[in-house]
Length: 77
Image 1 (spheres, rainbow, N blue to C red):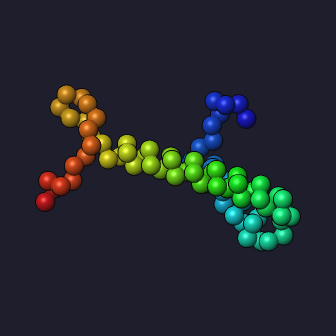
Image 2: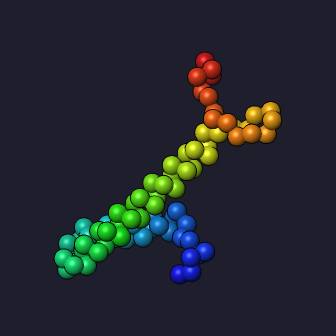
């Protein structure tokens, strides 16, 4: 896959679920299981990073000057 064809969040999640399913079956040779586990950890980290970035984006708003600022919910009450 070319570098600019980055997988989507959903594709990475599907790949991670497939790895977990294979490992849970327990019929994977040890060497392959270790490789799959490492790939799963990498996918998990990528997914967590994507979610953290999405959370940062969703917790920002645009002020009157057109600048992105943190959304402050402390004044909501």
